[in-house]
Length: 180
Image (cartoon, rainbow, N blue to C red; front, side):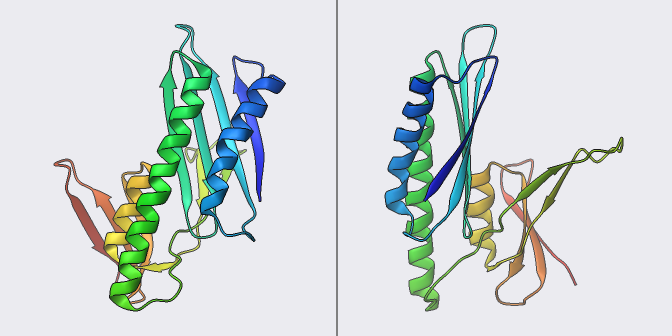
């Protein structure tokens, strides 16, 4: 069951906007298992040039979905971000199903959930994330990194049980760092 945390920056989140966001994002629930409890974090922004940006993050136990879209219409941005999230879910399910058939896994869960905490002290560290590492192979880690829009991703290598990092190189290809 999805819960919603909808915030607005430079915009008041009216009941009609809230209802539309809930209606559109709830359509994604057909892809989730029935017992999944998650909170959809939705951030709506309005810029001075009257463009609207919608950011949605849905941390799940096995996957963190994140998408953002900007357009000249708030409702259009919500539609675009929902479509983007649906494509991510389909891509993830296809990839996981293929991997699990190849490797004989029954239930493959591989994405850490993020607990974002803002630092209250006046330090140079401005954000802290705590992750639980799930076993996966480097290709799955690259897929997760791309879906999150990050430049690197830390994971537990399913074959070696060691901690590894995949990262995007400046030439657009990927690198792998294996800890000893």
